[in-house]
Length: 425
Image 1 (cartoon, one colour):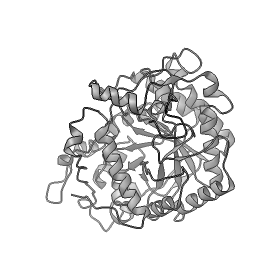
Image 2 (cartoon, rainbow, N blue to C red):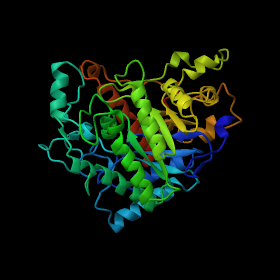
Image 3 (spheres, one colour):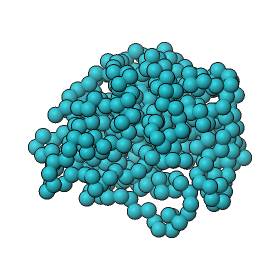
Image 4 (tube, one colour):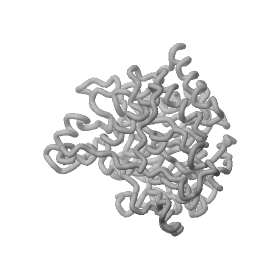
């Protein structure tokens, strides 16, 4: 089983297998620090047989968070009490030898009012003053104005200055390194700030951080280089990127140019995902009808490969950059589908999010358990039932937000010592 094979990342970090618990929002930090609840929840994944665990968003800016209950860091450093909390979190996450990576994020224009220390009348920040678009209806436009407002463009000093965006990511990475985590993943997907910089639809700058595909990714390159310099050659630096397909307005060639530059800067893995608040493809449900069941014939290889949402784009990246370590997250529900994706060469790591919130020991108990047959090694979840009244509100991201809230609730159950609700079908 290829899923059981170890893999060594360029930094030298060895992952014991190919299954990664992907990032999910926990939404349970009342003071923006990793409380005992985080240790309780992550202890379940620590003992679950994963090859790597990636945390939910940790915000690098004190002012702007993605939700009111995010874990955050400060460019000005940590108190001794905070350092102890972080070291405890790292120790629990890795108590069974599973390398754990912190996902670092700045939401940019996707920071709602009340999240972080920013005041109600303080504008969000972005590469350019491009407002979120959650739909064309009057309700959707009003919701954007009330929840997010109109962003303002960051100044050059706010990007590259002593306490700027780059410094925030670097200082956060240092704090993760000193706490004992094995690495960080820069969140440059799902419409957050780094993705806003990289996109031609949200970055209209004409300085060092915009104007061409290369300049739009410059902020990311500087972060990678400075994190490496401020931590260690053995410290893992990953990045989450958006896929490009027919539904995207991005140029494939420009995105590949950016990936080439990121690869040259020295990342250890790239995770391929997709979607934004405006087009939340990362939250779509897999095609359950296409999944195999125990009384059906074994599905074709082409059907299994289609199980993954973003594998086609990953295969394009693989064709151009054969040595990069690629992780694909989204849609995987069967061992056969995961094996097919690995054998296709389109990815090296399989990311699982929602299944991990329902079955935290999924690798050990099912997917990597050789006593479980291929046909039974699957976890297909019932779609989260969105309330009917919510569907009547013409705002693109509401259903996605409700689903994220539901799975965060399962993580909170784990934090309280309860089992998640088993929604397998």
